[in-house]
Image (cartoon, rainbow, N blue to C red; front, side):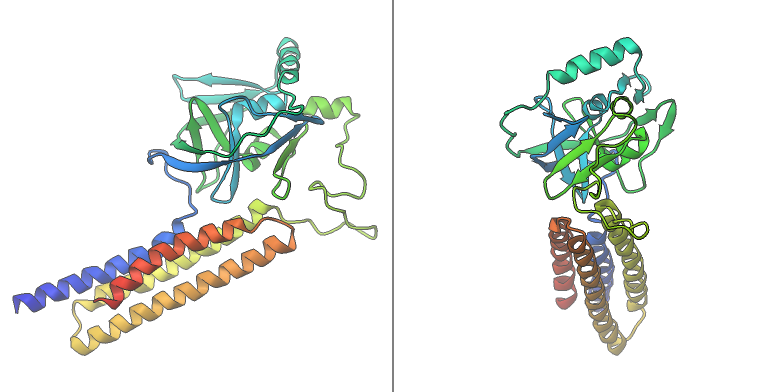
Length: 320
């Protein structure tokens, strides 16, 4: 009798583990919490074009793509946009603001020293980035990262999602995943150019041909918007899968043998349903990325993270 009760408890715990395993990969894209351990990320060889000039990242600073977002060093990119950057260690705060005339002249001078010229691009490297909790203040106003996003730090340099930085400084910063180019124009540069962006007529900001006349063209969704939509769908799926599997797990211990066999089968069927729904999200996201000429590399990252945990959950269920 003791053996039967112990086995029943093991199976019940097993179903709870399935519930956790099957939903864990759905959170694989979510940014690590500020107190998380180091995350090893492969850097990307990206191009930087600011105010019409090709720039290079300083030695020891990098750009990388993590969980579908492009990260750049906040200090250097802010400098490239002719913004002054300060760090308050006591308050753990980064401030980005408009420079004085003297500071602006110095920023322009420093940027001339980092024009890329014929410099050989950096080879990609795997770097141990660490999640960082810090306040970000732009022109006197604190800005918070969207839910699920994080700052990262490496050797004193703080890295921030390029889209967030663009919105925070009020300057258009574009990321072209095909050419791997981060492009931006400072307010001072636009003023010098007569207030107009240098985007050619008839060409979209991503360098692709724009729509012809006859009314405003439909806005092209950004890479971040497409992946954010996918991640929202995954989060919703996670909630559904978790609720169903937890309900099955909680009802398992009080069921008779026939009921337990039924619950076990239902758990496996639910995992199959979650898998099919997850694959549907990936297919839809891949189609949107392809239709808008974006890289689909993130799809395999989502799939690999999901499959690794799902295989563990499925094996556990089948061995009960």
